[in-house]
Amino acid sequence: TVGKCHGNGDATLLEDEPEAADIKEQGLGWRNPKGTGNAGDTVSSGIEGAWTKHPTQWDYEYFELLLNHEWALTKSPAGAWQWEPIDIKEEDRPLDAHDPSVRRNPIMTDADMAMIKDPAYRKISENFHQNPEYFDEVFAKAWFKLTHRDLGPKSRYLGADVPSEDFTWQDPIPQGNVDLSADDIAILKA
Image (cartoon, rainbow, N blue to C red; front, side, top):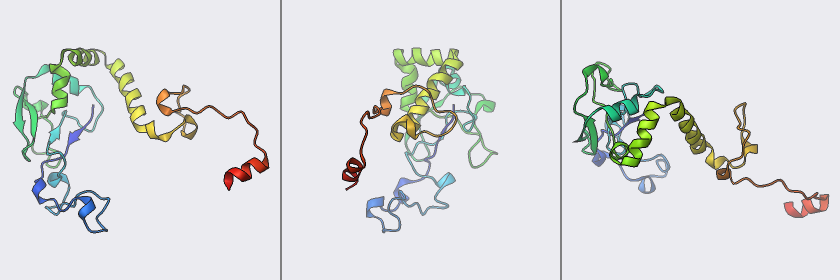
């Protein structure tokens, strides 16, 4: 699995919220004048760190780490609560995203901890860990839904990977069965 939280910057240094900012800044998020304003100076949730040793690669480390380590509640550099393993080997720690000479502990959020603390979610997590092909399939369907939900009907999809089935979340509209005359079309366009 992939991912990293970017949020070790100091939120008190951010400028006005987008609605209160100058017109040229609106719609761009909060302006961050500290340092570069990005990379190690990024401000978001305050949670900082990678979930796995390879946060830019698709793999199955997430469940491996989540299920096979003890986790302790800690604070991020920005002061947000997050979880870090208490028993991880140095070689299993991710490289820092901005300084590859430094290794950091992987992190988990409260939502990740729910995946092992809640008995029903733990069962699902263990199944995904033991059956990576099943996890790939379920994740692919969820990702497809996430990235296509607002596209409307299947007729708007492009490319060779358009699925043959219709999904209820696409709000499929049946094809009309009425022949419109030129007069009908002119009325509709008016």
